[in-house]
Length: 294
Image (tube, rainbow, N blue to C red; front, side, top):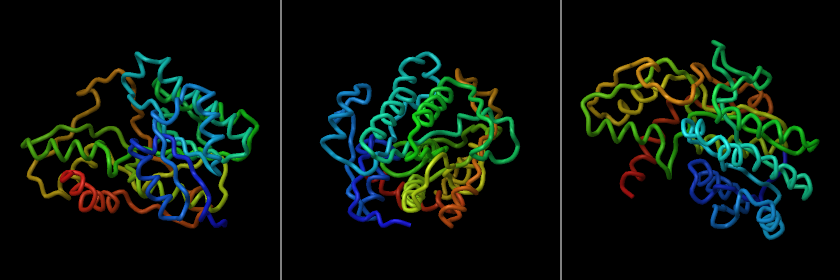
C-alpha cells in the first residue's frame, strides 16, 4: 500500500462532470494535488493539446471521466461517440505510456448484454447492445492493446451524487410536482453514489491495482425501486407505478440486467462497498438539500 499524499492527479472532466467534481474533492481530502480540467483547459480531440497539458502539469495520475454519455443520441451520432469514448482513451493511454503516467479510465455496465441473471464479473463475456456500449468497450480494448501495464479501467453504473443533475435528482423534483410517476421496473443494475465511487477508486490506487475492476455500491435495484426509495426518503407523497421497458421505447437498447460483481475490488482493498440504499440516504439527506438550495 502506497502513500498518495503529495502526488499529483489531473482529472479530465473535473470542473463540470458529475463524477469529476466529486473525484476532485475526494482526492484533495487525501492530500493529493488535484487539478480539475474542462474543455476550456484542453481539447480532448487534439493530441497536441493533450501533450501540452501533460507537459504543463506533469501529473502522476490522469483520471479520465470524460465521455459521450447520451445513450440514445449516440445511435445517431456514432462518430461523435467514438471520438470521446474510443479515440480519446486510446490517445490518453498511448501518451500516459510515453510519459510514464498512470491512467485511470471510467467505463460502464453497458459493455454487457444483460442476459445474465447473476452479477457480472470482470471476466464475463462482453456484448454491448448499443453504440454507447460499443464505443465504451472499444475504448477499453484500445487501452488494453497498448502493451502498457500501468492503467486502471473502472466499470461503474447508474451514477447519482452532488453537483449535477442525475436520475435521482430528476425523480425527486418531478415527484414534488406530481401525484404519481411511472418508472421502468424490468431493468436491474447497481446504483452508485459518486463520493463512494471516488473513494473506492482512490483505494485501488493505494494498492497499486491494475487492469479492470467493477466499482459500484452493493445490492441491486430496478429504476422503479431506486425511484421509490428516493421519493420515500424525501417523504414526498407521490405514488411510483412500475411499467415495463416497452412502455418507454428508446433508440438504444439497455441491458435488462447489469448488476456488477465487486468481489475483485474487495479482494484487493479489503473493502466491501456499502449498500446503495445507505448511500442514497446520504445523498438525499445531505447533498440533495444543498443542491436544491443553491
